[in-house]
Image 1 (cartoon, rainbow, N blue to C red):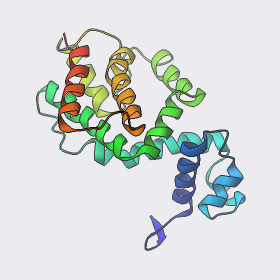
Image 2 (cartoon, one colour):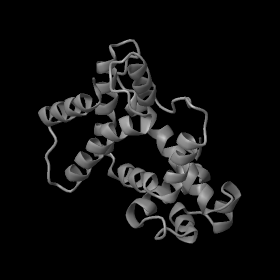
Image 3 (tube, rainbow, N blue to C red):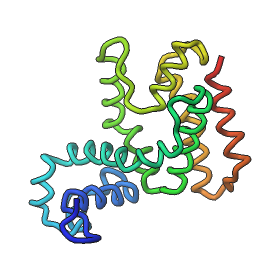
Length: 198
């Protein structure tokens, strides 16, 4: 939704400003006054949309996920063999985050912050034995584990074996240490699959 062609609504402008500032300076280096200024709104407007900075940061993580869904699901076929689903989704995540370093820096900070850790702890430790998957890759991993295609490890371990290498690779690509090409992508994703398959 936007108020004028090409101009985001205030809530979206605030989220985008917060994304840019947190990616540049971290959570503590992105005060609400600076977020509001970058968004072109008053601080009071920011608090009309978000109760406090914590709520803004959590909403930003949801917003980033929503903005990324289309890219992550590009070419994904839920009826393809599990291995192909896994490789497609992982490849899409890798390419999307390589092409969007601001998103990557925010996601990495969020997942390793008290925000992300509390969310994961609540989801994994305070929930019922089999929480509903939050994204297609989690769903693929759960189905693959149930079908004994991959190792019988807890979901956090399977995600670590998947995303750990991908995130380290993305860091090195952004740092200019690795030049990404199709062959490196293929081998890296195959290595992730080898880490989780039986």
